[in-house]
Length: 226
Image: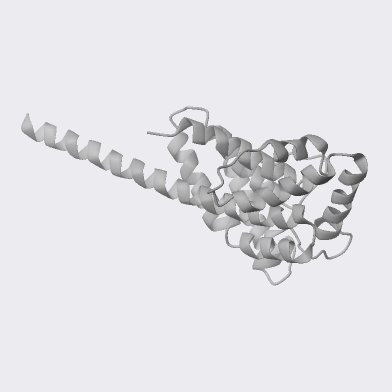
């Protein structure tokens, strides 16, 4: 049986992650980070704790928000080549931008009729768009329809095939290029969140496969008994 609370939590988590990589950072997003509660034993806790400590220490004064956005510009936005380019193609195709990875994820977006809409054009393999697509799938899965398992399988496949092949290198670059605890924490939080979600997806999909096989076996046995 699907954990409905977990399905809803995934929507919020991926929506928050998308917002954290969408420039500029805004006060409501930072407030969401501060208010987020995660069990201390969770692999997401160390990164989140550093982000929260940084924000609680400086508040949301305009000057503090400006400092974070200035650092985000240096790390991710440019101009020019940044210390942590937020594009899959950069890590998967020897520093090339708008490479095959961008084409591949756009095909997936089109397959799900989920082409990202944005006031600012971003390459399709930008970290914010890939996380946003997972937020979209999470919302579909949490809708309670008969397609939940199909959508969870799509989420699993997207993480394995499109996001995880480059995410660890990106997070390492982001965490290594900044001394600000917010961004070092964000790097660890992002990787831990995606890896933990993939582990959950693998578990729940395997359980559903086993359950379906058991039901099919009972139905066959019942048919023979008759």
